[in-house]
Image (cartoon, rainbow, N blue to C red; front, side):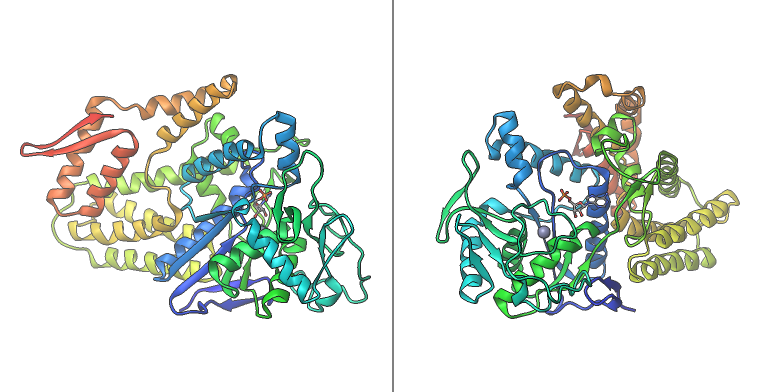
Length: 494
Ligand code: AMP
Ligand code: ZN
């Protein structure tokens, strides 16, 4: 079976095949780095991460590019407010974003920065002007002429026929329903960041950034373009218009849009008091792995309603998976094989795959792995698990975790890093007792570490390298260095 994905552009679930050989070229609209990432942002980035990981697991090569929007109205405003340069301002939030991405075990795409492509953007706008798709206004700004692109509206399925030519909006922060000629380039205002270019001084509009960087890095036509559903209109509609007007070729083939996250049934907003960054939740004592598991638990096209009950359940699920792995790797089982258990392991592996092929049905994939956990735990309790059942069980679990990424227990170290950040950011009073406890528990005793090292050695002697490697990685993330000596492994803290 092949992967089937919903394509916003066609409005259908389609079989996915890359346009060029075995390589998937994928562009993700990334964050505007003017604040800390919230769980809505990470809902979308985790959905994209699951897509990426599943493509990789399916044997594709993936060229995954994400932009960092490091210049826009909000950034310029906030940097001026704080009395720092735009660069200084965005560098801080980009670093924070990447730390959060790592904490959530999101595989980092190749990054491109808007401010590194300004001359390309100016050249692109000049090209559009030459073809009659762009015009310059008196103040030196440039706009896209929507009336010249009849396919405008094909992504968002809106009808723009009869739209007035030349009506426009001047800012990035559009009123959503005002489809009018949009800014490609903004003339400089006093005190604002601007660049000298072939089309004059100024700065690019947000839509131009994504069109130019995606085509530059991936080619004029590529496979997948992603972003939260709020970006369908106008951002992605505008990207299509500019790009296709410029190149005369189809732009992205498949458009992937995760639905917006709700918190306790409502739209997340600061004023409603239900707005959470990843760091807020970590300081309340929640593990990054629980947050990742919860944000992955609802298929991307369904609305995920984030609740604290759900978060506790996710934490319990992760704990069960880790315990299952632990029982398998540390248990003593009689020699031989129980065929029906190996059939179960194989079925679980196939069912997870089938669920993911069905437009990334993550809820179903999680249900399938828990079917296995339940049956295998019962078999262990009944003494029916044999030595040769262990490897197939671990394989099913590890293949699941290649996608879901929650087995490695490095939560305490990640939470410790957030604690250190909170102290330096004057937010120490927000560190909850639960967070302190989790960090403390992560600081294992010598006996506990010695025990882990012994297990790693045992797995290595049994040539069970996936287990020994994963224990080694776990120890490394907890800051333990291991040296191999003639007398066996020695360890020490960093
Ligand atoms: P931004 O930094 O606001 O440009 O957003 C970065 C990404 O997060 C975009 O793909 C947005 O569509 C997505 N996003 C923002 N808010 C939410 C939300 N509540 N639920 C899901 N995705 C969101
Ligand atoms: Zn974009």
